[in-house]
Length: 523
Image 1 (cartoon, helix red, strand yellow):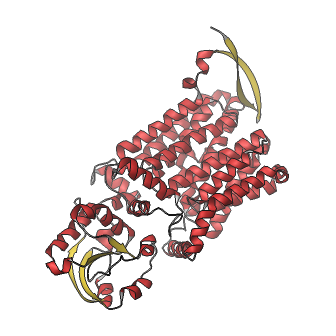
Image 2 (cartoon, helix red, strand yellow; image 1 turned 30 degrees about the vertical axis):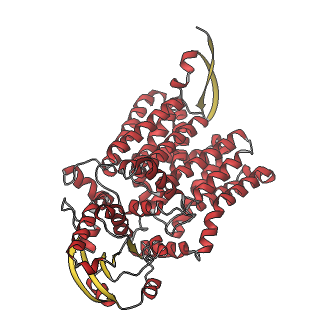
Image 3 (cartoon, one colour; image 1 turned 120 degrees about the vertical axis):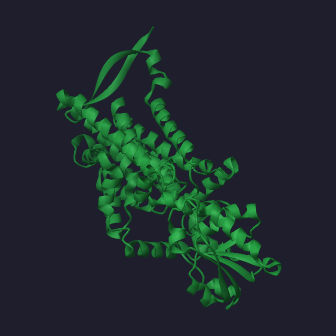
């Protein structure tokens, strides 16, 4: 058995040193490496998502993404094209499988966990620090990966960008700007808040020793790559009168009006739970510690988005993707402190940290993963905290009810029948399950449904969901109440509580083109 030196970084008074020990070749194989361990952890989260992912039903936001996935373009009203693109891949690979539709979101979050651990390793962390960083990132992985949503892919590109920046600062190889630019561009094609991280990078360059990169061509090549990657969405926006700006303005005003932005700072504690000391330590390392001076830029990549979201009154989860880079630094900094300042308490502190991290994972998993039987004690606890679970119920029943209403109509009313849905969840559900019942394509004025119009021919008889009796009577010559939304579990949610009535209406008082022009809605 041959031996070779293996180097481990250990922090002594905040400064890494190198020590040598002898290990066998077998112990340095890939299967014993940190990367293999991280890959195993990530795979476990994917398996958990796959097992639990098909328990209830599609969430209303997923139904909108699914419908957009059938109409791929370089942009959509509510988001750029990356998330619908992965939705399309899911449809191709898994059909209508709910767990399959959520697969790529779970994969993106699992990759973010791996990158978090790798950042800790790049900062000199030993295996314990690598694992602490990765496990600190798992709770958000479980929550964001439970639904097919842009939050999952946005998080991945934030973490990927931070990883590339760390590699840039550690290696001083300016060619990493090419990877940073590509990641930023793809992030902008996922969610426009990536622009806030880009501003953090700009501040980090201007306010730290990273200013030296301004003299390199690679930084500017990276800027060019990011612009080229994002350009297709900009062109799409220009062709559609920058409709997404109207959408964002409306949604932001709504969030402020109903109080969704009031708890931004408390939300940072809720999202990170018992891992707060780890990310605080990481921020201290980047911003204050002499050992972190080389990586100051990463500190600004947290501080600038934090301040901008506070000023702009963003929602709490907008900053969630900034914490993995702090977890990485905090775990390494803490590892060094345990070895030098509190060696006698090292095992006790490690035990407390692991209990806290596992408690976070258990709590978030119980709240966000769709695994408890509906109306069970755990379900009531989880759905009270996480209202998204309630919005995964009742969509198949909606399609069945509309089909029953259609079947009761006279034959002459069915020949030019339309279905008008009040929100994207209803429209998406009716277009997903409606073909099983022979229903026509549902139309809606919400987000990208409005851009797709009302079809080649205007309907004469319309089944209307999601609107009040007052609304339909104002717009149609005659309307009759024909049914109500429900779900087989009797669980109250947005559909059953806010707009349960389903109408059959005839005689639109305006022409359809005129009606449609004023029917644009955001949600």
